[in-house]
Image (cartoon, rainbow, N blue to C red; front, side):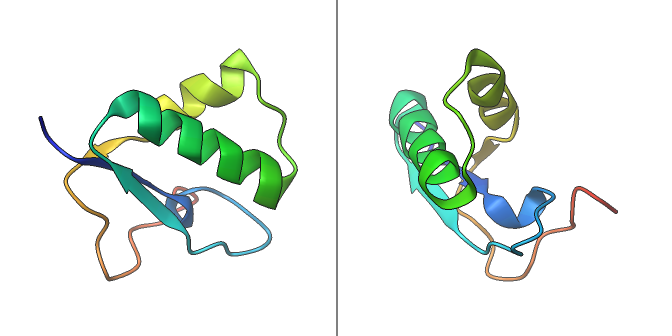
Length: 72
């Protein structure tokens, strides 16, 4: 099983959020990322949000350096 992560620095946001979340299971990662999006960014837990988050998964661990922005 490969560890996976999602990095908020890749998402367009006005807050400039720098949170990255990693987990061994995709379900655990999805749930944690959705919780963060709802609690920190005021998103609603919808199928569309979950799909967007799943498409943002990467294998491995988050990089220390700022990843290339999705807006670039």
